Image (cartoon, rainbow, N blue to C red):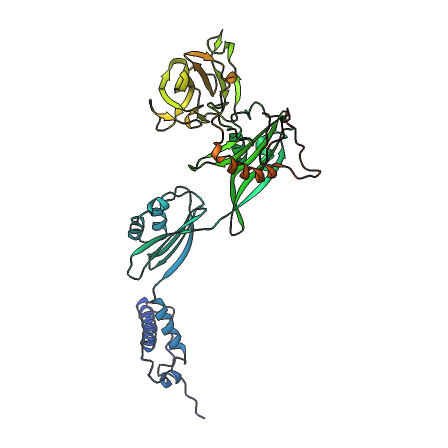
Length: 465
């Protein structure tokens, strides 16, 4: 059989002029483009067209199927480009910066932010937040962001190109967990050893802030029991919630508190017999601080002479929040000689408190403004005549200085008689949760100093404080 051979292209010597090599390269590229174009035309042919021409050997020598593959590649290149991405917010990130970084339309972002109620759910970003985005050819098609533990914002583009937003409520589960511990070195460490966060330790200090100074009075061997809310979503732990009940045994004295929601939605802590833990004034206006100078005679470290110290100094790091000791109105905010930056609050009954050496005042604080007990009014500093960062705190009655540590104030109103039955019913399971489980690792419970004089009624427990 006579064999036929395809004429070979003439070889181009390495020494050929650049012009000839360029012509050959251009011709080869042109031939390849022709093949792609032919394949693309073939892919655009009607479905009724016969397929025999594809199955047979092409006149240009292209193997069967190659043209179809080239056509598919060319068609895919013409399809719209879409993507889905999960964005983890970085430090100093803004939505505008995120959209520009991903080459998304900032006009779409403006349209989304213009939807009612969306801007406040989008603009506040913090590192670690997660935003899920989908896009098509650089245009936003959907956005999802969890705005709280119980709510997720979803934004979608409809067929007409308009955006619509919705808040989806995420179901969470609230579980109550009893915790029992003993103080070894610090309150925070004791809670951390139980797997609880520092916020729970701070909560406990807040619950008993009228009766226990956790910076001054905490003793190794003190014990505590709490019933704590914990928040779960889809079976996974999210965070610690509120303390529903607490007992703290400090130096042999037992203090108990139960959280109760009043009809107006506010929460208060009461003793098991219905007395309010809240009093007119805090025991200390700075949390977890130490007294560096008490009330009375002392040698002044700057004036270098003996004098009367008319307040209490609480040593604490610069920037530590200072809280109003009680409800009242701001009577002075400014600078006074040795006090440096100082705030004075007038309270009912002719009582006035003074807070000196502040590093700065709280925002929105002005003379005449009403402040609530526990509200932050400034921050610890060392302005004025101070050798180190501390709060100088004074308590005056009718203009006469009194020792703040000796002030005994009456508690707030007890549980109203109309709510007493409901309070007792809700107190019973909480009190049961405060009892530690028996076992070798359970901390011992110190008994109250004095027993109740009479057997309490059902759901009540009289604890001597």
